[in-house]
Length: 118
Image 1 (cartoon, rainbow, N blue to C red):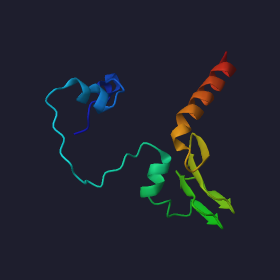
Image 2: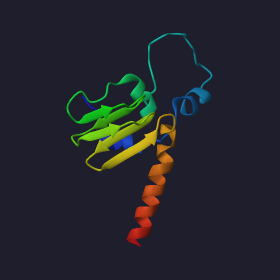
Image 3: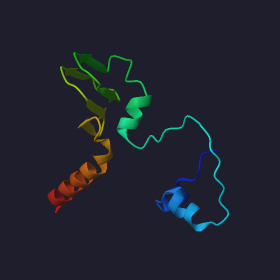
């Protein structure tokens, strides 16, 4: 059973430590090694997930690059330390190590789009 989409959209965007943990006097912490990773960035995903195995991605002389495509063929030659993601909505290209800044990039894109429509 999937969670209710409308209910999830109404939830505040807060991490559990601020929303719950700081407001409870009955919290218990238990150490564990679950092998869990926060996939909150493209860098984190690149560390765990394989690149496209199909013919969508062609790399020659590339080092430390992560490339994904939803069907478009992506080819790269002689580049290093990049994350490239191609979808039907657009192409994202950024240096590895800066994927936490994607929100900044999206804000700029939305602002530019809004100024063009006005």
